[in-house]
Image 1: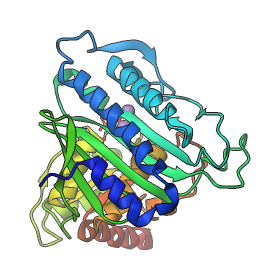
Image 2: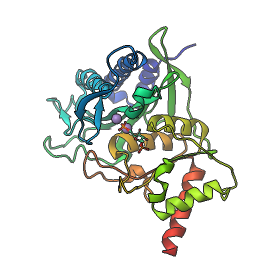
Image 3: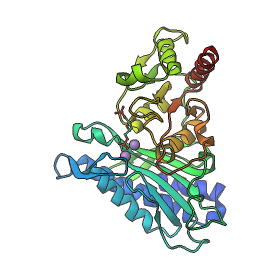
Image 4: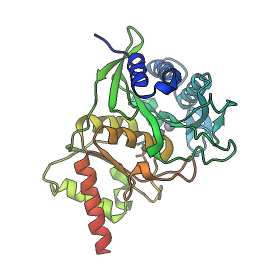
Length: 333
Ligand code: AHG
Ligand code: MN
Ligand code: MN
């Protein structure tokens, strides 16, 4: 018996968001539709003139790949048509995109990384889309950023799609984590990972080793401990360079992914609102953990929409081992 993402989301809505009255599932259908459009372009990337850069740079100062632009347009278009969406915040847009909605209609704010791992597009390596959904505070001042700058604990839902050997949507609405595999025959996401749980520990660590000499000491000590068997297990190193692909392996197999502070990115490279927050919500819902080196990612009060954060996410055993090394290293300094 197949359960589609649409049916699953409707069931979750009836159970947990009855007050939403269908707007929540209608909004999520905007995301799933956009990701189907994106994956269709990705699957033909070599054939269509979508490879390579669009010649522009985005707010991050990074060269925009054509698929970045296409993915961003697809999400802005599909979600802009959902009345329940009041504000969209995209990695590719400097400012939030606001829609004129009555407060009782425009109930949600959605953050997204339309195409994650875009440097991998031209070499046919998995890329992804990440999204994070908040309720718009009832008494919110439309001009202030306060309604947009909420801590990750207030997310109502979060998810990602990994465009890999198959296209898989993983999402949580705060009641467990569920994975759906796109069945190209019927064009629907079908439930394939019911109540996904992250293993309590793993045998993989995932970090860009080329920067290791510039990591702060506690990260270097922790990685040395993973390599020398200090945690009582042997580890393999895996690093795809697409956060969504590295995280998807971590939630299925366990272990840890890190993007520490580096000389190039003193605050870490990954963005809090549309990379770290959604994956941290999913990790905790699956029994894992996610910190910025000191604090839970979900407790961070954002200061600006494109802010970056150091990121350590994965199985409880590996994240707690990092916290212990971090405490010992800070005490000894
Ligand atoms: P994006 O393509 O959305 O800018 O994200 C790229 C990120 C993330 O996907 C990945 O984990 C990280 O960049 C890799 O960075 P390095 O190449 O510095 O390791
Ligand atoms: Mn990204
Ligand atoms: Mn991106």
